[in-house]
Amino acid sequence: MKFTLPIKLLAPACLLALAGCSVLASSDRHAVTIYAPQVRVNADPSWPQVNWQLVIAKPSAARLVDSPRINVRPTPGELEVYRGATWAQPATDMLEDTLLRGFEDSGRIAAVARVSTGIRSDYKLATDLRRFESDYRGGEVPAATIELNAKLIHSIDQRVVATRTFVVVEPATSSDIASVANAFETALDKAATDLVGWTLVSGQQDASAQPARGSGGR
Image 1: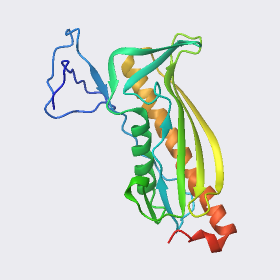
Image 2: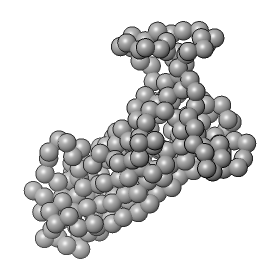
Image 3: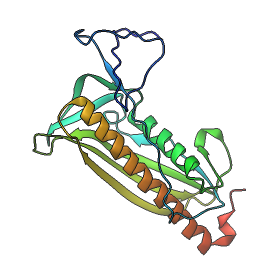
Image 4: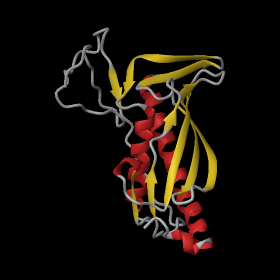
């Protein structure tokens, strides 16, 4: 793997170790720390067991949101990025991967896949990632802030079964970028858990209310 800038890899829990990259001294002014939140969604016992199939659409986002750069909002009307730090993936890729693993690991759904796989599905989950940023909110310590809108859509007739906006604000323990990255890991975990649970409940309510349509995708 080749980089145009030297890469410095540290070892907090949320950091991705990339094979083949150089490990350089922290004094290198061009060093870039790459953070990769590791999220594992734990199934809630109250979530239903469902027999329908789901596809996850690629999340949409504004260009500034869908970026590997780590956004920070020092004041309400100003958006900057942290110098010397980046995500391993753009924000929408992180969200999509986290949701896919969350549904798979839950063991509560017959099948789940990305839209690009082309499998037949009963429902489609579409998300719009509106905010993925560190926000100071007028204080001295920022909070990892994630805002997204989700729509659960019936695949055959394109009905919007349910829609909801999720907002998670997770304060960092300090203004240090490593603390901010850890806060993002927690926030992404909470957002994904809420979204997975909401999708299963909403889809099952619709499938139960309209049994003739509940298996319509197969």
